[in-house]
Length: 225
Image (cartoon, rainbow, N blue to C red; front, side, top):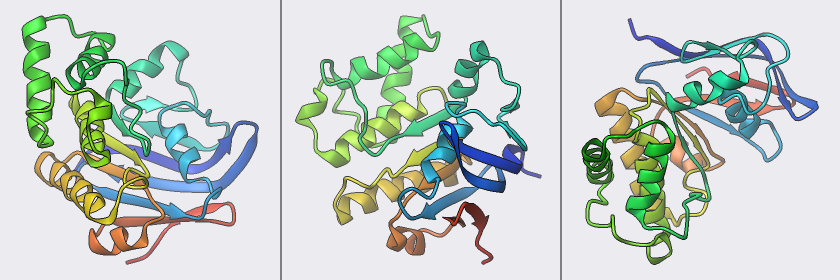
């Protein structure tokens, strides 16, 4: 039986001081590919922020990678986030340093110290996303699709059990978005890394099957297949 990585029960999801989703229930296990869809302002991103303990959980229960979100201490949040790979719509790469140095920065800031192991890990994740020859490049010399592949490589650095992708194809053309989706699906399939993806692109949801949660009218419920 696959290990449960993420579980919400009757949770209230908030965005700052206001509640945006009530009675939220979700279970995500190893190997799952889950979409969260809905209109702008329906609470999709607030769910992602709650998962990484950026937004507090005030009622109901939530557990992520062994951490209780209603009781997690500030000092333990970095430990939680090391188990999760996060991919953003706008890439959020550091533009003043090379691809290699972007990835090295993340590794060193999450406790890696051995120079040889750092170099091996950077080479491995870049190869995994088809960017093995781009380590020396500055991010602004890369296309949008290449920058997103680097962002995925960054998300893979600490070998996460769960990837959160917030509109990862939102700034990409159709063909580039297809390549990013195929990459995420391959990672999910080969390593059984669970993926939770926020999107408003219904064609992606139809093309790359997964479980679907629909956010609407202060609710977010799983669509029955």
